[in-house]
Amino acid sequence: GENVEQHPSTLSVQEGDSAVIKCTYSDSASNYFPWYKQELGKRPQLIIDIRSNVGEKKDQRIAVTLNKTAKHFSLHITETQPEDSAVYFCAASDNKSGTYKYIFGTGTRLKVLA
Amino acid sequence: EPEVTQTPSHQVTQMGQEVILRCVPISNHLYFYWYRQILGQKVEFLVSFYNNEISEKSEIFDDQFSVERPDGSNFTLKIRSTKLEDSAMYFCASSDGTAAEKLFFGSGTQLSVL
Image (cartoon, rainbow over all chains, first blue to last red; front, side, top):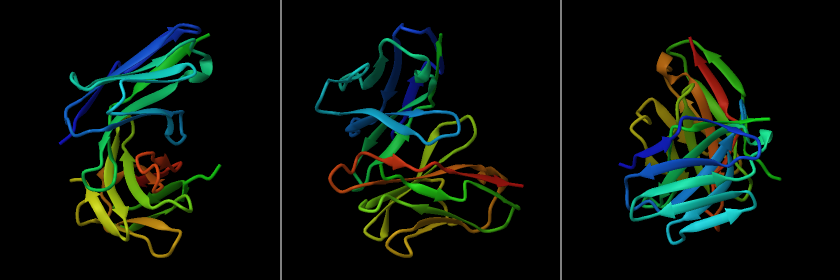
């Protein structure tokens, strides 16, 4: 089955710097890759996603890149702010069963230092 | 903005007891999911549900687990005889028919088995 690896497990950056989180996946059938932000004690919130037919997607300070050949995808946050501090999860998904089963990475705890 | 709601937010039970976790998905959504997150670990897929039947389930979702959509609004997860290792945060999620890949998560039920 699908396996998703995520690095780093923790990341500290200065406010205003960029942060990059990387994930790899194993199943070439995966075709949808969302990123979720989870603040302490709260629900995971979708922040950006990318489909397998696209190489890059950007939404203001957040961007995601996908390399299907290498089976890896990355989250880029520019001009980081203290409110970006949270745990970020990547996921890989397919719809072989007709529903989208997400396989999540182990998460990255991002700390933005003011 | 519509949200997935889950009750209770915390549930404490004795080992061997049955628990039912309740979820109200977003009203026009068609696809329903349960995930769990053991403290400090990744979010894990349990089961997906569509058209009143299970679409896919993980190895975790054994005979002790069941799901039900008893009416047009609720989606429940039952654990028949809880074990210590069932202690986790359980998240319900749903998605609609036009963007089935985008899962919206509830705020979770923290289950503690003593």
